[in-house]
Amino acid sequence: MNPFYLLVSAALFALGAYGVLARRSAILVFMSVELMLNAANLALVAFARAWGSLEAQAVALLLIALAAAEVAVGLALVVAIYRTRETTLVDDLSELKG
Amino acid sequence: MSLLDLFLGALLLLTGFLAVRLKNAVHAALALAANFILVGVVYMLLEARFLGWIQIIVYAGAIMVLFVFVIMLLYAAQAEVGADPLPGLKPLAAAVGVVGFLALTYAFAGAKAPLAAKAASAALAGGTAEALGPLIWQTWLYAVLLVAALLLVATVAAVTILRPGEGGGR
Image (cartoon, rainbow over all chains, first blue to last red; front, side):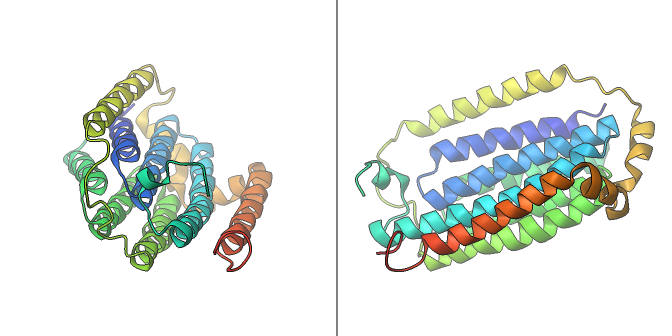
């Protein structure tokens, strides 16, 4: 099989993991999570291409819809936190007290 | 692996790197949008044409617009200013990324495709909506219904979280 795009997807996933850990703004952390989700999708499509199976493409389609739902809730949470705390930096949100 | 594959892979890594490194959130969002469009192009190359268009419409269109909109709404374009409270974190995060990449590569190395590339390509029928439709509306119907319900719940949740007054907004 052609493993090139699997390597690319692994690298994108690693970049996303780096972003999640290193970014300080909640929005940018969230964007890195999207990068990781997308890398997983790319791996699914690459595997579908190698195995000749459309099932993985159907799963990838469902994953895109799931990512849309996740973004809606996540960004709503970021906006709600900004309303009460006036910050989007995750370091400022390190206490459990509301 | 053709020259086009190499070119697209390099662009994907470059835009992904920029998306996690650029200081300005709007620039990072644009790099991520470019990354998503490139992924859509790669999908089309990998015999997933319908998915490629969905990727461009949903990810590069809807999701990225939502991100840029929230960045504008919260004045978060220059969010990462001021002193870094955890200065030693970035190299550590990079190490975690490298370890993750090596682990994934190791996991992928064991994969052996059962079909030749030509036969696999024929089985996918281009990954058009026509080929994917029966699978989605028959085999995966319940999953599609569940995801649809989840999308509805997520929409209601987003509206509820941001409703002024009780709960979220104060």
